[in-house]
Length: 327
Ligand code: NAP
Ligand code: F7E
Image (cartoon, rainbow, N blue to C red):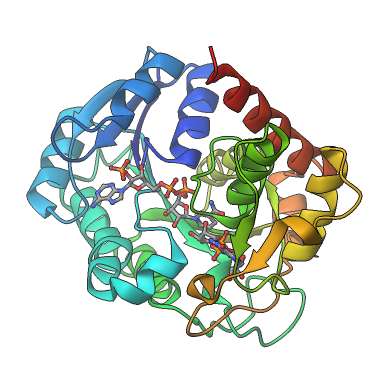
């Protein structure tokens, strides 16, 4: 039985990845930080076979101890302060966790290392936010980085240090440059889930309006459940490498509103949406669209869920969760 260690198991991707790996017969170990983390129970309810272990990306000794204890075949480093807007008001913490946290996890892997015949394989959760003020469209593995937020800057550090550990120490370390991926498990702070959750509440008469910032920005939105397969495929390759993972389609927040409100049975979203500058960012990423042809050809990976299916899945899930709250 292969052993996988996942940081960020309580997040959206960690929850999908743990289920995916359990389905592939892995023993999954999930890193949980802090005392009495309320999300730990959620993870165990969804996947009782996961073993939760304590650790924090700000604490190198905890990570070394974890790798020693778990003896993983594969480490998936998904832990991060991942909310771009918050990174502008907490840049130091973002750099500490999202940036330096990668270095600490790599150090733990390098120091403990696994056996010579069976070295630990490492996955880093890199991000399309690294492209920021994009130099070309669509973006691929060769597109230069120009991050637009402390989060994006920290991810560039995490990405580059992963490449450096691969080149300097021969680690089997791969980076997935993932474009936005969403699901019913997406945090409520992100725009897609904020919209589908608020819309479900509007539909049930529990809320009147949604307050949003810049609705002209465009993102390449895929389904998180599809994207975790790409992470795993990267670690099954003989050689480590970097891959863009994306759908190749881009849609504005306006288009997301169009589809979501149509699915919910409304002709027009404008009466329900108000602009609130508090949700604007000091520097914005205007347009992202990924070229995942390398992942298609080298990994045989393709997304399965379309944009419309994704929006519908999220809205319908939020509607039933909201309805369940009345009972
Ligand atoms: P998420 O839902 O925000 O989850 C983040 C996870 O990181 C949570 O489990 C959180 O744990 C954990 N974490 C935060 N601080 C930590 C620390 N100091 N030590 C250990 N763990 C810590 O993010 P996600 O959407 O699943 O994304 C997973 C990864 O992919 C992140 O690195 C994100 O930056 C990256 N990424 C995401 C996307 C996307 O569209 N979703 C795209 C590209 C890259 P707590 O429960 O304790 O807070
Ligand atoms: O914003 C605009 C906002 O916060 C998307 C993270 O997973 O993907 C995610 O980062 C767009 C931006 O995601 C609101 O200005 C308008 O243009 O949902 P988001 P993000 O910033 O793209 C990348 C790939 C990651 O790596 C990150 O970890 O929507 N927007 N109005 C708004 N955004 C939010 N959150 N809230 C609003 O009210």
